[in-house]
Amino acid sequence: MKIVKRAIAVIVLEALIAAPVAAQLPTERDPIPLAEVTDAIDFVEVAGLPTWFAKPAGVVDRVSFATIDIDEDVDFACRGAAGDAARQVRNVLFEHLLPALGTKDTMAVLEPLIAETTLVSAELGTIAVKKGADGEDRRAIACLGWRAPLRKVVAKFEPKEQGRIEWLLLRAVVHWRPVLQPPKWASSVPKRDGYLRCAFMHDCNQAQASAIAAARRDVQAHLIELLTPAVGKQRATVAAAVGIERIGAVARSYRVIDRSKVGRFKKVEAYCLWEVPVAPMLLTLPEGLRKVAEYQLQPRD
Image 1 (tube, one colour):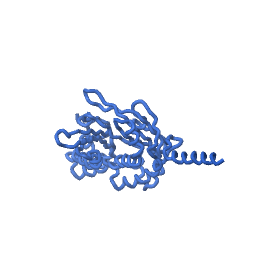
Image 2: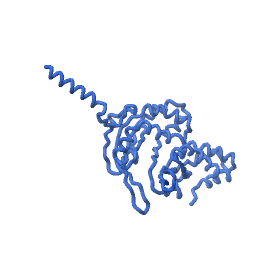
Image 3: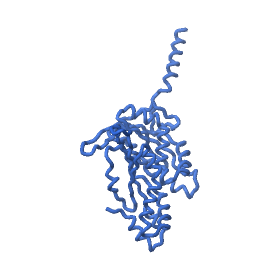
Image 4: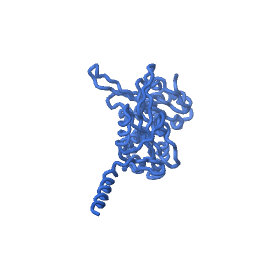
């Protein structure tokens, strides 16, 4: 009898020890709150890019986004994505919101959004990093898919702010992609009807953070520069201020340049492609100036 009790005690003890490291299986039916996510995530292996990275499946009344970790080593990518999930969620959402909302409003939206965020997917695939004429490298990409209730978050704000916040939360999150050469769109900006697009490069040790922090200033200054010859500085400033409220990211890339051979540490270049809708800016101008302003905002070959 004593032996049986001891055996039961050992089994219970082993179960208690094993419990904290049990694998987590996030699904749409059984989501895991962000606060409960650990590095014991089971990833589903997929061919090529994870679906959540390429384009998260939309769900009515839900904000859908992903966090990623890219590494040459599969285990490092998985541990990085899951073990650092809380920080990555905050960073991805902060970078997504900051250019359009500014720091104060971003923080106001960020807190309720994070509080409602749950993990619904974990996928492991590969991403290609182009070498130019030399082909490409392939690296592991661990991708976590997240959802948060849209209306519940938006309803916390004044009605006049809800439309812009909802538009921004429904807009696709653009991820940083590693590259070995500057992206083509950095020097040849792709066109989109009805939008002004522009690209900027930041070059420093914290280049990605610098590019996001400066996005609003960079793009707004560019808009004012384009519009001033046609409508004057004052009207250009007003129009640019309206346009910048709807700034959106189109693409982001970064490359690491190793300069250790010439006595310098590694340097990072961050490239961002932004777009702003033209129509809201034109509506701030007198009708007689809209045609010439629209012409100034048209893409040039």
